[in-house]
Image (cartoon, rainbow, N blue to C red; front, side, top):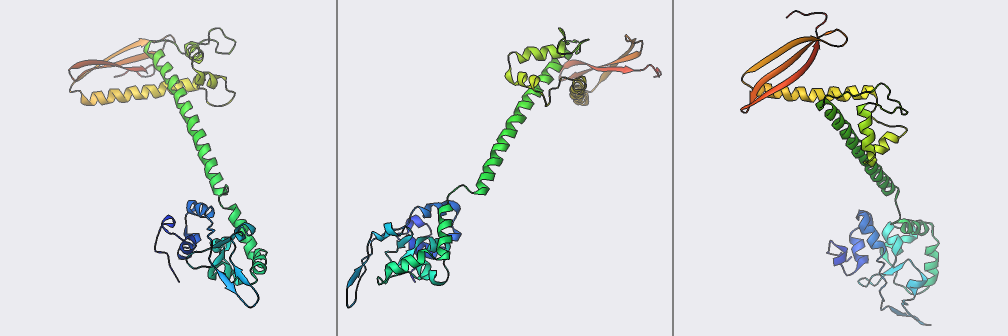
Length: 292
């Protein structure tokens, strides 16, 4: 049997020969879709004569039988769908061996196209290239991932705004909360008022504040957590600078706060890269124990 020596179907002049040398099932999905649209319809110079009449191959048979194909190399006719998806029993002569006899051609063709295996292959042939369930699931997963990433990006931008507000109020030594933080209050405190001001110009902030559910970051608990996170970052920065400093001085002083609790303030002074740094570490409650 003739075997196509080319690995690429585009390099082979006879697609039928190529498909016999390389099974259709071994092709990629894209190659299968390409093969589906390339049913060969060559004119065969086949003429057979018996005692009563002469029979010739007719090109219009391709229109009459949409599954019919042929090989110019072997001079055989085949069923294209059974050649692709495989035949069994009597169908093998259409899928593997090929038909060259013109006698009773139409009777054999009609018998073949109503066979169970051919009908099954014909259905698989038409479904090939349609949207597959794995592709639909893959596309749904891709869209879901894009939506999730977009939501994560918006949440990060919003959280960044909250951190900026926290740092601004801390830098300016301004109070965070007001006496009345309800929606009807005329002064909800610096933290919420700054967020309302940002919402007037930034849509993603406005959408977050107006949303019924989801993270808003406006509660006192969230504010305290953000302050603690900012404090932790500052302390880590101070710790890194202390590790680089050769000498460190500590300033400590005790004072009473408005609740008459003794608070000790601690300040570090040190030199890093020829620059004097003074860092306030924080207030520490020493009401219960004032010993060194």
